[in-house]
Image (cartoon, helix red, strand yellow):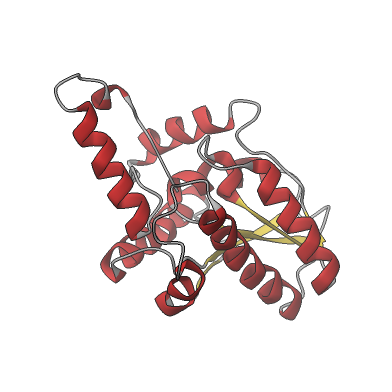
Length: 206
C-alpha cells in the first residue's frame, strides 16, 4: 500500500525489520536500506545482510519490498568512534553511530525520490527513541525530506519481532554489531556466568 507515499526504512538486521515492516507496509510503500558500517567483522555484516534479504523475499514474495545493501564502509564508523572507544553502550559513540546511519539513509532517500525515511532502530529496548527521533527530525530539515517519527517498540512491537523471528527462523544476534558492544556483551556474560541469568535473556541488541 502506498497511500502515504514511498518510504525508505533503514534496517540493522532482519529481526528488527520484521515487525517494523509489517506495520509500515499497511500505510506506505516501503523499501529497506541496509547501511551498517559499525558491524564487525565484515563476515557478520554480510550474514545479517543476507538474512535481511531472505526475510523480505519470504515475507513479501510478490517483490513489493526492495532491499538496498550499501557498501561495507567500516572506516566511516572507526572515524566517529575514535577517541570514544572506552565509552559504554548508549553513550555519545552510539548517538553518533545512529546519526551516521540515518544520515546516509536520508541522503539516499532524497536522491532516489522517496517521500519519507525512518529507521527500525527504535524497536529495540536497548535504543533511545528520543535520540532517534531527535536525529531524524534534524536530518529531515537539513536534507529536505520527510521523517517518520516513531517508537516501534511500542504496541508490543519488540514482542512481535520475536514472534516473527521464530516464525521465519531468523538469526538473532545478542550484540549491536560493533566491536565495543561485543566486548561489553562478553564482559557482562562473564559476570553472569553460573547464575543462569544470561540464558533467560532473548536479546537483540541491534
